[in-house]
Length: 185
Image (cartoon, rainbow, N blue to C red):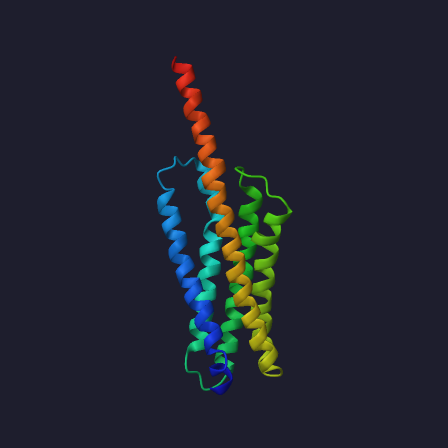
C-alpha cells in the first residue's frame, strides 16, 4: 500500500533503534546482575525496568506491523487499536506497581515518564485505530508519534534505571559492606 510505503524509512529507524535498545537493556541488566537483589528491588523492577523493555518492544512491533505489505489500512487500524488498549491496561498495571513498590519514592519526572507519557502514547495508538476510516493521514501521524514517544520514554527510563543501579544501589551495597566490616572489627 503506497500510504504505508511512504513511512518505510521512519519505521526502519524506529524499529532498528528499538531492537538495538532492547539488546542494550539486556546487556546492562546482565552487567549489574551480580549486585545483591532484595525482594523490594525485584518489586521495583516490575515498575521501573520491565516497562522500558515493553515500550521498546512495542515500538519494534509497531515498526514491523507498518512495514508489512498490507492491502488496506483497516486490519492495521484494528491491530493499532488493540495494541493501544493493551498498552493502556499495561500502563495501569505499571502505575499500580509504581505506587506499591517501596524502594524508591517517585518524583514528578518519574510519574511523567513512567505513567503519563506511556499512557498518552498508548492512548494515541488506540485513537489512531479509530481514526483510520475517516482521517487515515492523521492516524498515521499519531502512530508515528506514539512509536517515537515510546522509544524516547524507553530511553529515558532505561537511562534512569542504569543511573540508579550504578550510583544508588552500588553505593548502598558498599555502605552495607563497610558497615559489616566495621561491626566485625
